Image 1: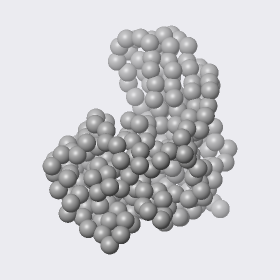
Image 2: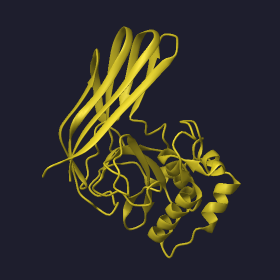
Image 3: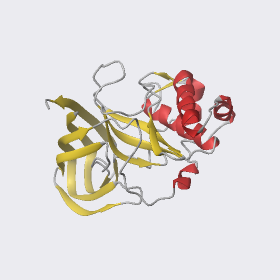
Image 4: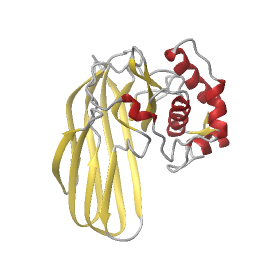
Length: 268
């Protein structure tokens, strides 16, 4: 599948920001499941700084904007060819030991309810267990936009019984780590949901490290493993760690955020 992706993230400031520094994880991963063409990143009024590939294999770019500015827009555009690898992340070079991803964060710290959910899942091997853990999260947390926030933890989403893809990923990561399976948060794009309806926002899922296979993706929100509809950007211990855009600014006042994403299938 050949996908054309455009993604704009706009920031408007109540009072002009004097200076901004951003770290962007917005370049698709290098793996057997996807190949990138004509990918561009632009920040209005920005200066591109150092760029590097981190230990997890993600491409990181630094940008700075000298103010005062009242608004900046981060624009991404390009084409990605994808193919179905049954969720297995093949050909992705990284040097971080998978055991690193057994470490909990505030977003994934388990409570008694998450521990009980983890214990209830069974599996004949690591892969079967991972599938059943993902199924358990899908059954326990219904998809409901607007119920949770960026700061909502896995425990809070499970208690609500509702959430979005971020909450499904955090809950799956949490219960996988309880069962001794390294797990991490993945940010990216999705062309369409499992029922074929269009998806007009950035997406997130979890990867679980399975002995003999390596990292395998699980999208509990849609009840599937990532296939050719998915484009992987980067990963981290949780949503904050894997955020596509991270930054700091000097100045005061509130900030308004606006995001527009379009993922369109192109003719082969």
